[in-house]
Length: 367
Image (tube, rainbow, N blue to C red; front, side, top):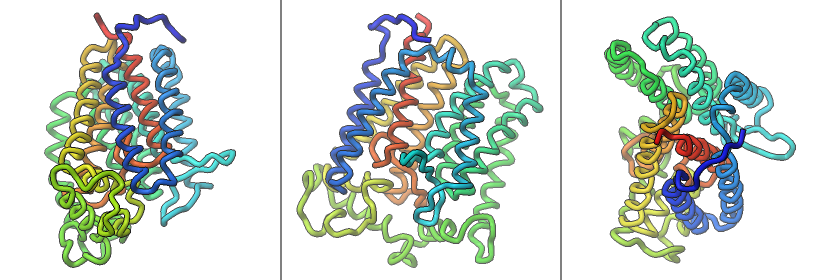
C-alpha cells in the first residue's frame, strides 16, 4: 500500500497553508477559551500525523474497500441515532471506549472516498438517469441520518459536496440544467413554507434562526443575539484589531456576548482581536487551500483522484464561506465550524485526513 514517491512531488505549499490556518485557530481558541487550547493543539498534532501517514498510502488501494467505507459510515450514523450522546438538544456524538467524536464530521470524508471510487467505476453511466438515481439513493440515506440528529448545517454541507462530486464526475449538462430549473423554484417555495407559523418541515429553533436573520431587530435578545454581537465584534476590530487576548471588558470573550465563541463564531474573535487584516488573512488562506486542491484535481492520474481533491476543495471552500457568512450576518445561523480554525477535534482531524488524501493524489499526479 505504501509506494515510493519523489520528495519534489510532495505538496509542501498545501501543508504550509493548512498548518498556518490551524495555528491561527489555536491562537484564537486560546483567547476565546484558554482551557481548550491544549486540546486543540493535541488534535492538531494527531491530525498532522494522520495526514502524513495517509499521504504516503496509495489511495487507489484504499478505495478498493469503498463499500466497507460506506457501510462503516452508515453504521456510525445509525449508532448515533440509537446510543448517541445528547447535548444542546441534538444527538450528534458517539462515545466509544471513552472517546467522544462526531460521526457527521467523518461522514464528509467517507462519502468523498466512497463516491470517488463508485463514480469512477461507472463513469460511462453518468448520462444514464437510472445510475444517477442510484447515486442519489446511496447519498440520501446518510443525509437523512445526519438531518435527523438534527444537523441541518452538515446536511447542507454534504449536499454541496455531493453536487460538486457529481459535476466533476461528468454529470450531463441536461441533468444539471433540469435540476436547476426545478431546484431553484422548489427552494423558493420551501423557504416560503418554512416561514409559515404552522410549518412542520423543519424544527422550530431552525425556523427561528431564519426569521432572526430576516428580522434581527425582532430577535435581538434571542436567536439574533449572537450574530448581532458577532457583527459588532468584527466591526470593532477595525483595521488591525484590539490586540491578542485583549483585556477590554467590552470584547467578545470578556463580556460573554457570544456563548462558546471558540466554535461556530471563532471568526468574530479573529475579527475583533486581529482586525480586518486578520480576518482577510483567514479568508485568503481558505481560498488558497481550495485553489491548491482544485489544481491537484486537474492533474490527477484518474477520475477518483480528481473527485477526492475536488470534494475536499468544496469542503474547505464552501464550509469556510458558510461559517464566515454566519459570523458576518450574511447567512442564517447554521452552527457549522470554520475548517482548521474552530474548536472541535473531530472536525480538525477529519479535515487533516481529507488533506492527507489530497497530498497522495498530488504525489501520483500526471507529470
